[in-house]
Image (cartoon, rainbow, N blue to C red):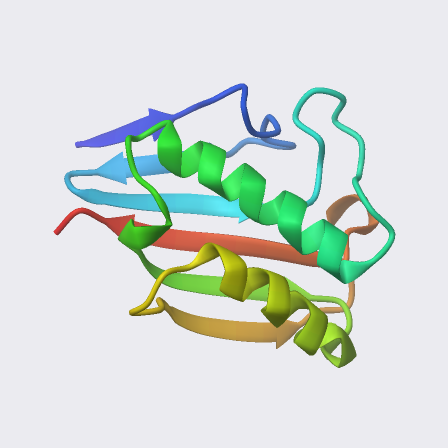
Amino acid sequence: MKEPIVTTAAPAALGPYSQAIAAGETLYCAGQIPLDPATGELVGHDVATQTRRVLENLHAVLAANNMGFEHVLKTTVFMTNLGDFGAMNAVYSDFFPAPYPARSTVQVAALPRGAQVEIEAIASRA
């Protein structure tokens, strides 16, 4: 059975999707972009600031299901400029404990609301 996970501590979905779906012990988190959950406005003009906001939003979604970054198995990072990978990676490494989750990072032509970075995750208690 799947259960939608919703929290006001992260930005509301911008379309017909859930912030996350729990299925048993696994949580599938939709991609987060750097929106301030209180205002809905894009945060930051650089990829480091945006990555921090994205991961704070992701943390809020995980916490809504009583999980944390230690439960994350896999992330996918979408960036509009892979030349900013080092700056994103420096912030990313502050949030995830070892052993680090598996990760894919891809460059995309554009992201919603003009964001420079979006991160989705799969987490599990198993």
